[in-house]
Image 1 (spheres, chains in turn cyan, orange):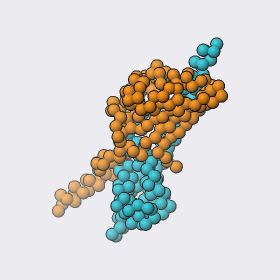
Image 2 (cartoon, rainbow over the protein chains, first blue to last red):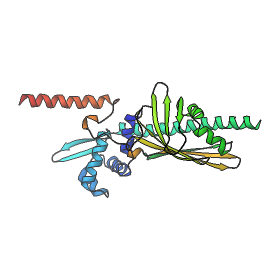
Image 3 (cartoon, one colour):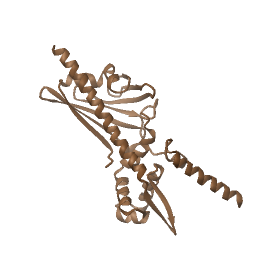
Image 4 (cartoon, each protein chain N blue to C red):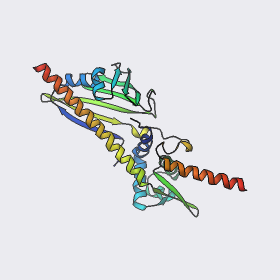
Length: 112
Length: 148
């Protein structure tokens, strides 16, 4: 139930623009905000904002090279977000199974 | 890969009216969702879901349309009423299928959860490595500033 930490992760990756940004970063290994802005239909300013959100969630890291800042994905954190999503899906599946079991038991009792 | 919503469904050999009771009656809800539930079953009604050892999480009901549709917005962290940036939406839909019911649940709105703006609030509590690096930077920075 302690979701707050992983919520931050998930919130960061659930946004479609940020997902595309992560995809481009994964494909390229490293990229600057300017490069990313050229590949995505988002302004450089918009890219910078999304990168800040990803950075705060620990999903990307930045490295200065000359006058450029290069960003790359931190795969461990991305894996954690994916695993967490699978876990939440599994929790709902378990709850639905419990509802099924209880509803069917109740229905059969009524019939009997 | 990672989406803004989670969807699951199941086919139940009981009519929608029975499933509706299971999904909305606090006495039953406490059996499949948390350990105890309080629910004011009307649109805008408050709900509280308690997990032993974790605390109580608050929710607000949105749509209550027996026996077809039930939705609520629930908040994290605990003891906090749902508001923008702290909650996700859970929607149950029930549809008759043969003699049974198809029950579908969707939890959505993860993208709208707020990411802390404060740089110091970045990372999360269990990311101790991240924090150690941050503190290391801060220490280096302080040492540099002190030597000028």
